[in-house]
Length: 458
Image (tube, rainbow, N blue to C red; front, side, top):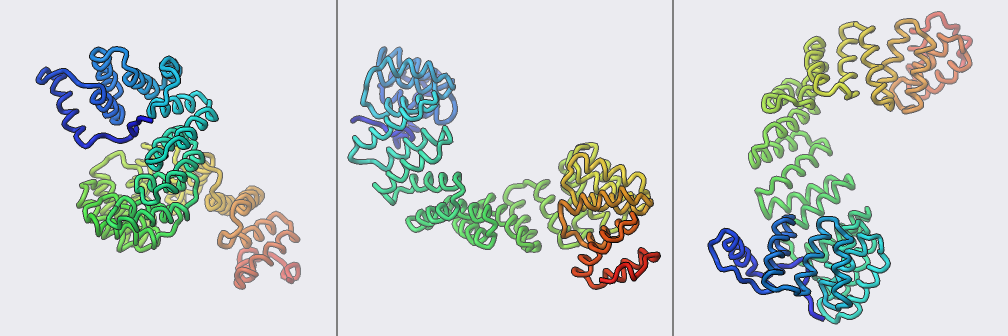
């Protein structure tokens, strides 16, 4: 069975493409044989240049009218354009050919037409009829199903190829990709390690291994993999960035800053780098330095919501509430549907004892994102300060439903129930509060000085 693997180009293809482009520019001869034209069309399709591929095919059919191989390329172009039925008509007109690429195109057209079982039969037939090169054929077949996100079927054929040649690195990369898509992380890790055992200097394998560990939240192992990438290529900016992120995730903020600075030197991507560094300094509670870097980021990109909110948070921590509101309001001008910015505004208003406007801002945030237990508790606190006992209790209970581990939440609910004259319920929550903090009993009676201690004998 004659074939040319779908995803490979000849070693001298660059010279061929150069000769073709010279012809198109009127600077070279205009004859190309069928195989050369197939290679040219494939090259443009692989680059996503469907229009140029179609133009090269038109030349081919002028030079070699009626050639079946070139006709199949027309079907390939139709498939690339999503015109599956046109492709199918061409493929059916070419008859029952056993030519490799034609069979593969038929399988692709069938998959895109929803006729998956027929496509599987063709692919299995290809595999069954071949005696060699099974690994590379399996890759070609797998791509047909990967394009349709039928990962399980792609994996099935890749495993056949892997059994034929367990050292095919290209196949192993696709195998690992499928495992990742199926969230089978341990198998993906095992596969990337197989690649590394074959060639320990393949930085792509080390990087992908690091990414799998990162997704698994195993940041230490991710760091180790990124270090290998950078040992192979010290200028790999993406590995450097991911290494910095990993340091950040395990709260190694000083190391994260150092690595983010290295990334900035590699890429010149200063506004984002400064943003990451600002956040790292914020986590270290070095707020002045954090503000400095956030402002650098803001200077490089004015419409920078994250830098504005970063500055506002740092100013909140420094209890500079009026200054914090200035930056929060600028952030809200960029995105007034961001619930976190409304919270920052509310917290600054609370700091200025403007509880009325703070309550409005908190409620705006909750309207945008109801799943905020801390914000619900903050609203409840304001309601209690205003003597709105029933409303305060409702908000405390709503916060409790979302997160019953909030600090002092049981104590606050106990107080709210007491203020609502529900002594039995108050006693229940005070008991829970004392179980968490023995000082809760004293605090309760400081707030509820009119409570009868005999009603709260636990």
